Image 1 (cartoon, rainbow, N blue to C red):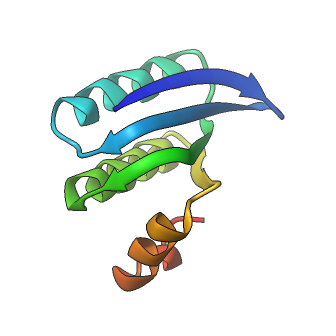
Image 2 (image 1 turned 90 degrees about the vertical axis):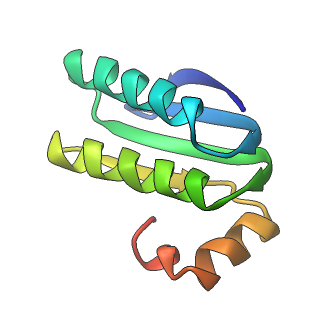
Length: 99
């Protein structure tokens, strides 16, 4: 997995690309989110339009990111989830947690 960050609409957009599988990527994302918090950027949109596959560790990484941003007084939301990722969120009932 790789990702790019940009700023739009008074928030930070993080666009993931490839397979979201947690592990070292989760550490990298966590560090990125804490760096954003340090500069008072606590509203994040995760763009999943270029994600081909996501496993349970990848879902856990998103939940961890949501928790991190909520604790900092912000939010993390999902955008452009493919049908495959959308079904995964529905089956796991995470669609009720992640907006």
